[in-house]
Length: 391
Image 1 (spheres, rainbow, N blue to C red):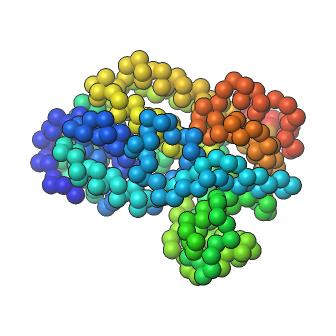
Image 2 (image 1 turned 90 degrees about the vertical axis):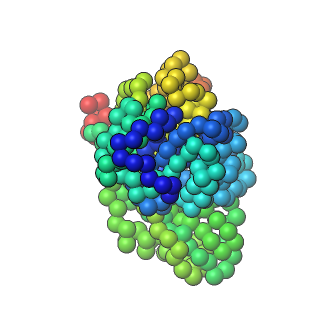
Image 3 (image 1 turned 120 degrees about the vertical axis):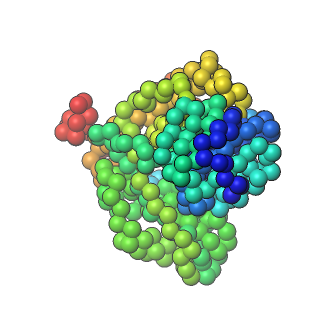
């Protein structure tokens, strides 16, 4: 951590970044790639940036203009991935990659340390955030041309009817080589409890794997101990010889059923999950976060909310609206145990349609393909009405 700034001493910074997660990290890297002399401060409330997360993304999620600052964050990469549903398994020849919290913390800390006018403060809890300054609980104040608040999904109050993507993940050491060499993004060939349930498997090394038990559920409740036991039982059943648990992560992300709220064209810019910069139907955060980071990196701090901002917001709003519509259908028109059928149908579509969906670049033809044609099994107008789809 760099030396503290004296209380109430405005720093005249270009940017003040509140929060030290993925969104702030991408913004800092994007800005410093294009403007190495930019002045910025990153304020993280805990004792380290990055938290305890695994952020994954598809190869097509990252625009070419962002490769330079995203690639150093990547810890694992695979050439393809699999999905499995009852009666249907498929390998998709699309690249897939993962960023770990440790990797993000190391890369971003070093980049900020090397920049002449960038500062990282951990243990810096913001108590007041305005358009031009941030005040910490110890009285220190940081002033800037723009303030970007990316303090995470916990600050996004769920609207009525919101569903949740919730999960528990265990990173496991293996006594024998992993039976998998590419990720298994969805294994829905398991008992469907508490909504659409699937296991997510990332082979991190020959003897290391991350397995998550994931639910698209009506509630955010998680029984950590019970689900951890389910993961270990799943690992044994799938041929993983577990020698130890390295770490556990968990989360419950709101999946909105309504359109994107108004994004105010004024500082402080609320970014990341709380600001709506995520994929509403998958919970993936990188595709939207990296586009916002590109915009901030390419735009002077005093001009963030010009015509380019309006185009970015309009594009994101259109994609967000479609994802929220799909969420509403999934959470209201299907009984919880039947939701897997919607995803099984989706994964029979052309690879290009699937790739554009994940990267928030669906075309009108893609949207028609998803919504039209033979409906998935379990889709019920009666269920939709009873669950308040038209409320």
